[in-house]
Length: 329
Ligand code: UDP
Image (cartoon, rainbow, N blue to C red; front, side):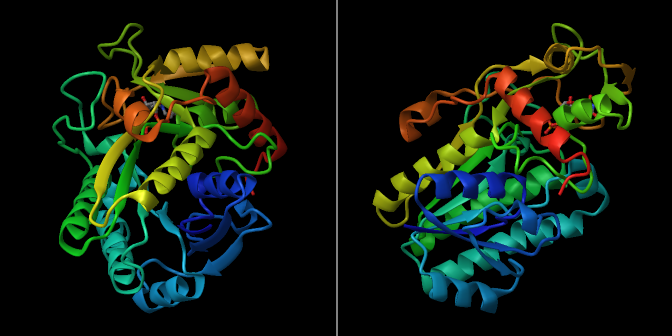
């Protein structure tokens, strides 16, 4: 089976491709390399450098590849940047998805689309754990752009028979067991890489806020290893392939277990075997106190349960990657 992976050179896309190739699938990545890295591509993955907004290119690639499933990982994902430059986010994350849907509608209307979404579609949740159908009130252009893209896929499924699934991730983290690929963002804003980098001589760590309404006052998040995300995508595609045209559904991917920022720092201290220096700063605008998902729907509908998302495995694989690649790719 052949997978067309849009955004395949990015953090989650590249881990998906490693997993898919290890499971025997053939992969073709399309990426504009604005955030992704050519070095992140598996050596057996074919690569087309190009942009999601290029309808003619997408149509040509779909005809050439004739994929069994299409995966979309090609979104911009920095909340702060989405506030200062919403145009960039709506163009790529919404218009890009619409362009992809147009190309698929014309060239491969029966081929499933598995879409990366996010728990940021909820904004500040009204209740925990968060369920797929809970009310959605995104508080950033990033979260809104992802919710709009979910609606686009659902509407194209209803009207034109596209088959789609949106997978809403909680906090993606960790690295490939081999340490050949890992988290390498142009601008690193995430907690785990920032803690690890601070222990390797990088910027001193600041924990954003210690007076949240949580057990230790720091924010609580649901961390899921990128290998688990990759496995869930493959399951999603296999299920979608068998569904009738027009099928659409949404699943959330996390462990259901929340860890506080302080617990993350303490666990990293334990693994590296020395204290992590940090200070408390102001809360980051738009950070909800706690986010963790209900896992029942993904368990029942996808047969998915996180297997590689113990904090220990997440942190060990992330440390191995950062130690092997202190400056990224
Ligand atoms: N965070 C922090 N210091 C950092 C980076 C992140 O205290 O250098 C906090 C952030 O405010 C949030 C949690 O860590 O409470 C997880 O943030 P991250 O950016 O990793 O993921 P998010 O939940 O925002 O998607």
